[in-house]
Length: 300
Image: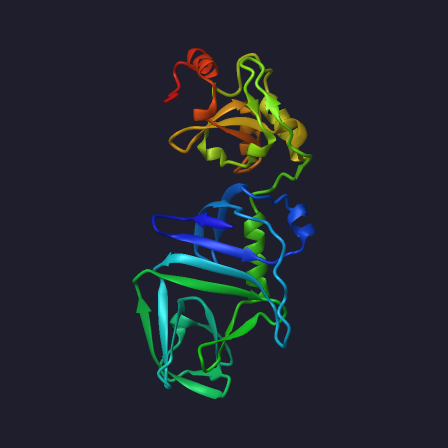
């Protein structure tokens, strides 16, 4: 998974999970959604880049690393210098075991004289420096104990099971409405354009422009609310997948599914299952039809 959360700042995540877990949460390659994590200090547009077979688990002692989070462009960091000269740099809130306090303590809250536990005994904190430059940071989720050692001396740090579970729940939060059914191809009735099933993904609703005001005047009063009530029970991709154009500026233009998109917004959804077709691949005659039918829109 990749998340773009600002200029030069993005997150890459790899998670080791059962196949049934991915299927239950309707995760698939190219799915996009809004991602927010307070623990990782990341908010932005996310996309599933790949789902593939897990690598072989290495033999030997110790728990298995089941998730890796790489955050680029982080500027809220702290460096802890130990009495042996080794330095640990991480996010200011990352917990490290403080022996004299007998608790997990955030990096930025450590003080000179505090004692960190290492593989070979206790080491005194010599200095704590708050940084403001931009660096890449790494987070791990470890199966079982959720603790691991860093640096040559083996300083004990922690990613709690609660924090990791929270990150996983944040990943899945956009799917308040369950998805089911297989996506098939669709043909636009007026122009004959074919939207292939291979182009199915979930673009952000915030980037999809409707063809017309919603609801249309021909629809009965309360139509969107009734549609939302139906979708609340689940989104059938075999029947309800929208058809959208990907425009040259990176936004999307709805070809079919304007009312469904509005209903999904009212349900708190941030994406909608869609077959996506690049506007440049639409035949000239079909482009002409859309330009003439909806002249107030920018068709590039």
